[in-house]
Length: 70
Image 1 (cartoon, rainbow, N blue to C red):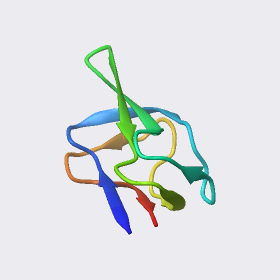
Image 2 (spheres, rainbow, N blue to C red):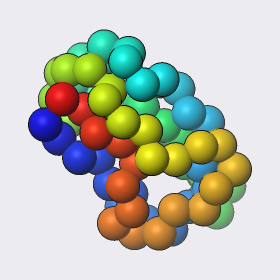
Image 3 (cartoon, rainbow, N blue to C red):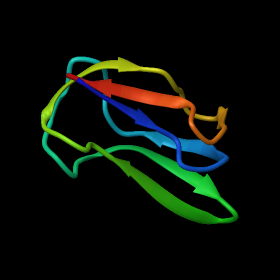
C-alpha cells in the first residue's frame, strides 16, 4: 500500500483516476495547479486506486493525502 501525498500547496486541477482503477508506476493520478504550472502527481508503484482523498477544485496543503494505491 502506498499513500500519495501532496508535495506543495496547490489547487487540484484535474482528477485523472477513479477509485478502483488499476494503475502502473508513473501513471498520473491527479494534476495539481500552482502558480499557473500544472504538476502531475504520479503513482509510485503499480496497484489499484483504493482511495481518493481529493476532488477537483480543492486546495491541498503540503503533506495532505491525495490517494492510496494498494
